[in-house]
Image (tube, rainbow, N blue to C red):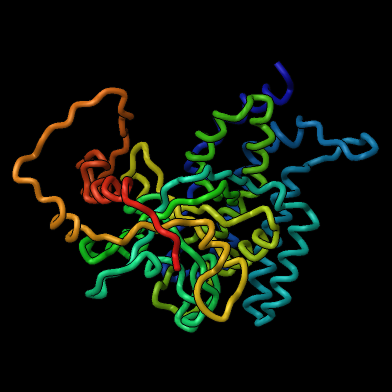
Length: 379
């Protein structure tokens, strides 16, 4: 057994979700910067107390001359945490450009972009996007990103600044519904989007989902990927804090996410970010995930849509639950028998302790209808 496999086997049982909880909900009476510093310090303390003795004391980190470097992982965690706090302080001081420059330089100096976990999205994956009912039939383009000529109505979002359109998608209709603050489901229209090429996204993963992905990685590399997650976890903490005041014009919870997407998408190989919803009760989900995706516009135009995103995604005609009930209203519920079908193990608790198969809910129903619908290029 290699030293790396031995170290991995010893620290893996110590990686419990309680110590990697995201998203975090800040108490009403807290000052954001102090709360951010608190959760970063708590994570650093957990690492020093429980993991440093197995990693920093035993993993052989050597410099170019072969000399052993001490506390490499711990120092990187401290470095990223300090970068986050200083960036927010500069932003609070009104030095927004300086904050952005500082954040970018600090991450570049430590090659943090190479440490952040990324995922390849295979061609023709399904994504979903929702829009509130406006008493009209929507076209595929109506559920794409806001047109450039309407950019004045683009408000701030976790990973985009006011006035700059971006395409936000969910991995299922349930996640989209949650992002609309659980609006009446029948008041939402949905469209399915499929990517037309492989895409590379930075993945901000919950620890449970990261560990599942880690199982598919060659055991020789598992420790390397785990250390990358541990080092960049301060960024994950800082980008997944729940918004305290949803009606506020300025949301400090968005400072680091907006800085991060600017930093990441400056690299031509990255198309967007995959990130967990801060509005989902994850304890109600079983064998299923709830992630959002953001794909920033690549080229600014005077009007219309981002040409690259139009090439990247095809869109179905939007639909809603009422429309589907009108179209599909069989007098007798039939039973379909088949062979070789994939068993869907996803379950959800809309009502606490009432667990139901996801594909039997309105979310699953709508996704099944959209699954075989024709997709169109946005014009």
